[in-house]
Image (cartoon, rainbow over all chains, first blue to last red; front, top):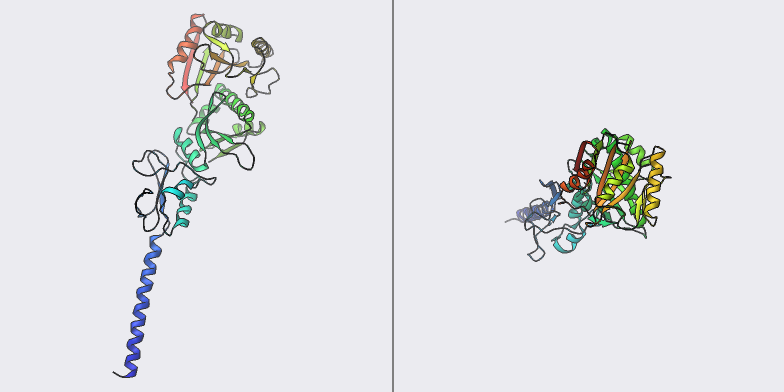
Length: 227
Length: 137
């Protein structure tokens, strides 16, 4: 074999080795692609990474990714009971995620879930959505009254108590004088109770709040938000 | 969605004093979980409650009567004497009683209690109810 042929053969082997390494790197990239999420029939966001099986902390780590299941009624899937101020599943990151190489990808999913899926939720489903995604606890009681969500205070400020309205609620409010009176007298007392606790009070809705109601809330200094 | 129970009782004509008198004779009390809560004469609208005040029942009733006399809606919190549940009662236009039962009312609270403890006593006292609506939320 001539020196020239040896050189060509060596270059060929080197190129083949480089192609093989590139293929392996590509496979690693696909394994940490961003997970997706889907709505459950219960109206709560169930987060599952693409192509990854749900794992408990005690199980062997997944190769890439993990899951954060916020729905306590979904069988053996681990439950996220703690979220941070951005709605991210902080508990899961510590105890039930199997992060391997994709912590960034998991945070991407949790952030995307905030405010992304409240449409169509009613009643308790919407309350659960707010509690989970805003990082609060649901069904707290002050002054004998039940408040649907309480967000923890930050920077020395008191907590925020939330009244959640959904579905056709606003139609009932604006369609009759007694509907509006009920709304106003209930909001007024809840606001007073919240203030007596050093908390603020906010009305959340996942359907548009009528302009007349918005005007009244504004005139009373009562914050509201559509989410 | 709130766990509250909403009541709308439409009467042909019933004054605040008459309706409240019936309720107070049939197991209701002017009180809240702490003190008394009501709409004072100075309230800017029906949302401007004075909550958990140390004001006496007599003062609360007097404020309510004065509101009615000047064409404002009387409102106060009533609780059942023995059961400790109840809520906010508001009189509209001299003929409509609206109540939001939001004190110690749970998800499984029996809606029939509203009829038996509010609607029936009013009817038995001769206050005709054109409609009596009880609903959650």
